[in-house]
Structure formats: C-alpha cells, structure tokens
Length: 301
Image (tube, rainbow, N blue to C red; front, side, top):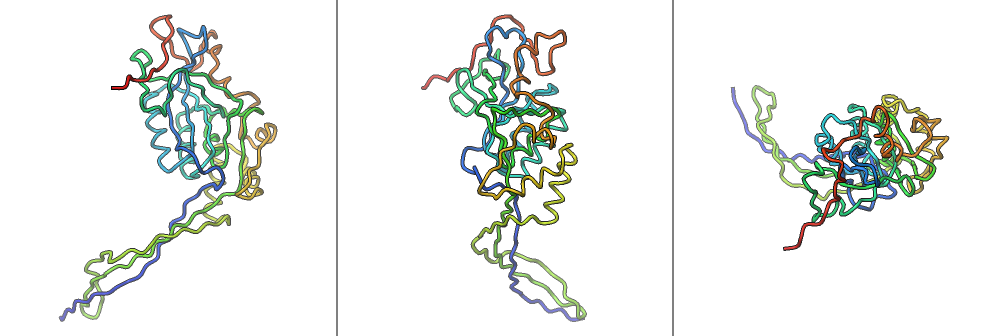
C-alpha cells in the first residue's frame, strides 16, 4: 500500500441570506426596560409594562430575554415603538412573547426623569428595577418587520392614533469569496482528506432582492398561522414596494387579526386596571402608599 500527500487550493463562494425591511432602517437599536405607571394617585398599586423601542437588530431577542428574566413570572404587556428591521429577530421575539402569554400594543413611553438610554440614569432601590413613566398611543409606530413582533401578543392593540405599516420583504445576501487549502492523501486509489484550512478571504459583498423564495414564504405563512394571524397579511405586505409603506387602518388590522379588538394600547397599562376587584396581572403593589420617586441622574464626579 503506497500513500502520497498533496496540497489543493479550492475556491468557494458562500451566500448567506438575511431577511430585513428596507425602509426606516436608520436609528438606534431596540432597548428594553420595565416601566411603572407614574400617573398621579396611582400608588400604592400601579401597572407596569415592558418598554420596547428602537430598530430591531440581530441581538434584540437577547435583550428581550434579559428583561423577561427580570420580570420573572409576571405577565407584563410589551409596548412597542419601532421602525422595523431584522425579520428573523422580530419573529423570534414574537414567539418569546407568545410563549410567556403576554399582551402587546403599539405605544410610546414618556419617562418621568431619565430614560433607559441615559448611561447616567440610576434607579432608586425602592423602584425594584422599574423606570417611571406614562404610555401614549398617539405618535407611536410599528412598521416593516415590527408587526411580526406585535403578532406575538395574546391580546394585541393598535389605535387610529398610532401608525402600523407593512411593505415587501427584502432578502439581503452577503457573499464572501474564501480560498481553502486542502491536504489529502491517496490510499489504495481513494482520496482521503487530511485537513482543510482557510488560505485567504476576499471582500464581502451584498446583494438584495424582493423576490420571495419558497422557504421564506413558507416561514412567514407558518409564523402567521402559528400566531393566529390571517395568512392574507403576507399578500398585503407583498403588495407594497420596499421603498414605500402601507399604513394598515384599524378595521383592516382587525380583519387580518393583527389586532384582537378596537382600543388603544395604553388601556393595557392604565392605572384604573389596578383598582378593579381583581387587579390586572401586570399590577404591582409597593410596601408603602408613598409614591416611588423617579430615576435620577448620577452626579458627575
């Protein structure tokens, strides 16, 4: 038995698809925090919610996972304000929300004191990790990939004073040219690979398309069916070019089951829901009737 050792240069091109929207892609990445209603007279028992605002990016599900861990077993509504972004990340977060049995809504949050994006913000110990603020439907928006995240809620609300918009899915292909060095040997006339290493990498380039492949179509239709959303929602998305946005009126969202009823998202966190005979699941009573002070900025050294 004779053996020979050879070196071979192999050229490969890899194309990795990623799903994204094309409009409203600028802006800060999505941040998450727990917020407590700051309405006068709310204390000692006030509703809380999960604030989710900003562009949906690849690691957004990790941020949501961290805030859900902070919330523990409490069922806090997720109030969303987002221009969209990564579709796979939006779907992942929708599934996380559904698995926890949470409600969703399109709403902005106005903070009392400093905000989660403020690096100098320090929460007092009695806040138990919750910022202080108020929720408003007016001026909120959920566009592009964002409705996929909204779809994860058990109850889903978006009012005529908020903006929900969709458009075609854009698939971004990232291609990289890689040259490999492969060593192999011939044993009894058969080639056996010894090892394979990267010899060089060429520049990465991207290309985009709005043509929906069968696997991506199947993924989206499967997700809508899983969430109880009418699959006709995909047809509505595909009817609008990626550089435009189709606003969905409230009655159409209800027909597509993207929302579950008419109403504003701030209804999910109104202080009145904690004064009912049976307070809502997102209410949390403090140890004292004294109002919790809002977050403050740490003093500069």
